Amino acid sequence: LACRPAGSGVAIPAPEDGYLQAIDAESLLGCAVTWGLTIRTEAQVGGFLLAGSSLATIWPAVAVRPEQIAAVQGGFVQGPERTRQQDAELGVRQLADIAVRALSPAVNDPTTAMMGIDRLGQVLVRAAGRLEVEVLTGADGACVILVGPSFARLVEVAFTQIRHYGAGDVMVALHVL
Image 1 (cartoon, helix red, strand yellow):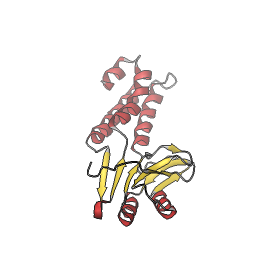
Image 2 (cartoon, rainbow, N blue to C red):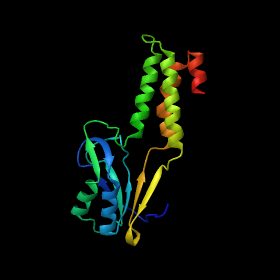
Image 3 (cartoon, one colour):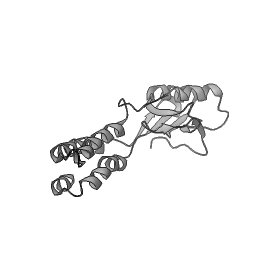
């Protein structure tokens, strides 16, 4: 990482219950530059947060002021539902759900399941090339560390249920492989 925070940081709490819908990285970088901070996101887009759970950690931990906390909180958008705006895991889950529904005994549509697996493969190939941690830097050592979903997590979401429900269908199982 370009910046490595030292010592204990201060946790920035979620102001309310709800899904983390988006992170405004430029807003967070503005906070980091204004106050000479390092900010690392702790919550991931798509996660459900209870009020008070950690959105981010900031360094240095000395004399963190309420206006800094409020400004950093303003870089996070929470709401009542997940959205596709920045939530890669939601899109993967929706594709996997289509494949799983197609495998149900009531539907029994392995062709649709295999098409869903194809699209999941397409998404995962693109996801494999992206950074799981992105670092934005500003003046005077200010930086923002954006932690996204791991590739392993996306693969787990994509295929865990499909493997379970498709185990009895040889063509689907081979297609997953």
